[in-house]
Length: 189
Image: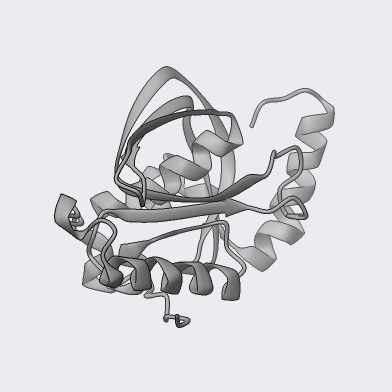
């Protein structure tokens, strides 16, 4: 188990579609070590999701964990550590909602991204079982964000209004207060 360096925007691996993990690799010691490294890395970087390409492993593998004590995400139910091998995402309801997203591979920036809020993920578990999971709301955004990495996409590719891309300090100083005003007025942002 090891903490790996998260590669950043500009590294070519982040823009390449990841390769499927072969059925014979599931349950292997090599894949188990990669998953352990991803968990250690996610926890060290204080993230809630990590895709293998973010640590320069171009395979279709992602992990998500939203701890109970995650103060950064109000009104978000916790998600236990989950491992997704060869996940495929399906939009159940195309109605969208926007959130300010950040990314370990795009440090220091936040961007407002609108995504569908009801999706289904079909994936293989670490035990080799074919499973499905439906998620809604902000959790649907988290899953889409992480699984985008497997297709060589970053959240900045999903921003439709580049005026809503900001450095974190400016987001906190200028945009977050405006967001609170809009929320209190019932304005959807």
